[in-house]
Image (cartoon, rainbow, N blue to C red; front, side, top):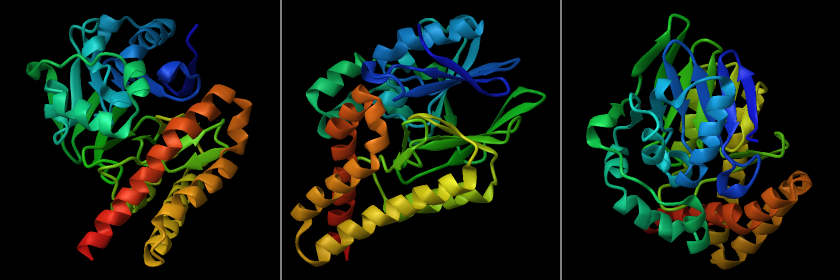
Length: 308
């Protein structure tokens, strides 16, 4: 059975069992007069997502909006599969990312550079989204789901230039996608999760600072769970990004970026200790997620050094 949690009024978090790992990836169902799904998981998670929706008592054909925080495979890759069961749903996506849902060839090529063939296979086959079912979202756009629930879109670059965060008015919460990083092990771990090639450190920090000014009451993470310890969590996300950024910058100054990888890996292993109580999650993070984010920092620093 799929785990479903009511994390706020009319908001349900569904464990999408990303890559068959519990408590790694989540999508959110907003059960209002109009119904919305925030993120989809990859194609291989479609069955879990549909089961979770059913557990809430909602029919897939009643979903009005499928909203992608960004177009990476673990967030929007399953859109085309889910739309087969959601005949009236529109996919709402950042205007810079829409073309990659309509024609995912370039997206898949980029994913192959960042992810191992094994992980690509675990995500499943991506199905294109028909153009007439795609709705472009821009900064400050809104969607009304009910009298008490309006979604406001926030341009949130840094992790990717096509990322959106979404402020929901009913509970004053924000869906942050990957803007803050990986929130794992029941909130005991918060580490960056920003792979190459799009990561921009200071842009990412600026996005989080913008979220802080909104003074939200709750944060909904895509990896994984919700937190009402908002300002402290937002500041911690900034601190961790800058910590690792400074580590890489110092390595570049000393001409030893190769050594930085080992130092970063050792530090992250220490931070991930609480995740050992979830062995499959811990092993997946060590093998796949952490090397990816370290590569993102290194790629950012090399790009920055070339333009200096």
